[in-house]
Image (cartoon, rainbow, N blue to C red):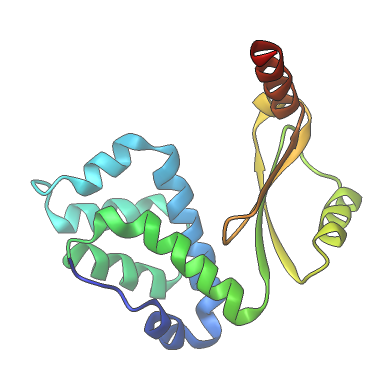
Length: 168
């Protein structure tokens, strides 16, 4: 299988590395939420130009560098690797720029004071990515690039209680 040198990609992106990472993250979330889109991309019978056009149209104002990267991945038939590469690139950017990339999922939009509270919990320079998921009922979930995660949602607590009752 062909390899992508993410360190080289980071170097090529230069001062646009975080912007590229944010676009790559947006693409990853889009693919993770849309199984049919992933199937479309992985289908070798669909012309590459059609795949490129669809992704460019789906992403709102994507950075030019991201479009070039997507086109390269499609040309090299690495569509199946986009999600994995995006995760790895996020971890690399986080490490090299000494910034925590944190996905925060809540049932309701956060107030500025709540965002500041989460940032103070992290005790490091952070970039919060806010997601809404009404099924959480309340509380929040944190996921830090590199693997650390915390579920402080009401849904998570109810699921844990259910598991404890089942296993009691």
